[in-house]
Image (tube, rainbow over all chains, first blue to last red):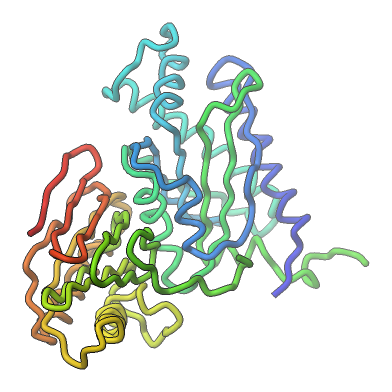
Length: 205
Length: 167
């Protein structure tokens, strides 16, 4: 099946733009999300999208239901996640050195606020197909191997297919990439909504 | 690789066994993988100094045959077939070890998929008369798995919880 890549990119860039506003407001400083990857991938490649390191990373996962369903993961290396916590807790950089309740809460709230802004904007860009909005689960915090984390995110999306649609954004704070971003894997029904055949998308020739 | 291409199914010693794949090695070497909710199925033929490692994602294939390592019901048979092929033996005395099946995100209702994977593999191995000589399953964390092909020893590092060995 062919699909309209331009339309898909526009939808996710719209999501990233709204999420950028939410992130900047939440952090109280210039911040933005950029769409780094947006593609259909074999699961083997999708599982390796965050690398194969033996170093643990942190993540907050949210199951998304509603007009757009799937799994959303905010993933960060430890330094980036703890730095984010310092910013939100208004501490000097480098204060947070381990994952206590406060640090976890800071990252969980970031996932909630930025993730919902991102997916709500994607729903809005879908028009009537996205009118029902999203119903996110509470975020779940974890520290784990990057491949194990991605595997768990992929699990439910690969029951019916060996191919997944994957969207990955990166955070920039004060103009600099910070080693933190969102990964979204829409479920099969949402992939169909996001990737209608080109002939159905209204594109003119 | 282009989207839609079927990835290689079989990895070899020294390779990391990717999600849904099967790794086979004989004579020497180590097979490695990472698992979360998936299960690492290790089959070891001590006399032939050969081992297989399947990275199983789901309990049943429902007739889908393109990725035999992905499903419990096809991974056991395919790993055995590849081991027979690698050793040149028509019958093999194998033992099994299971690692993984964690519930990393508790979003699902009912039996978590990781637990379903473990239960499916246990049933299939029992039906085939293959003894399970070690397992580190369940919990909430991912695991790094390394299989010594000669001895069948499996080293398991659970994220944030140290390393254990299945002999």
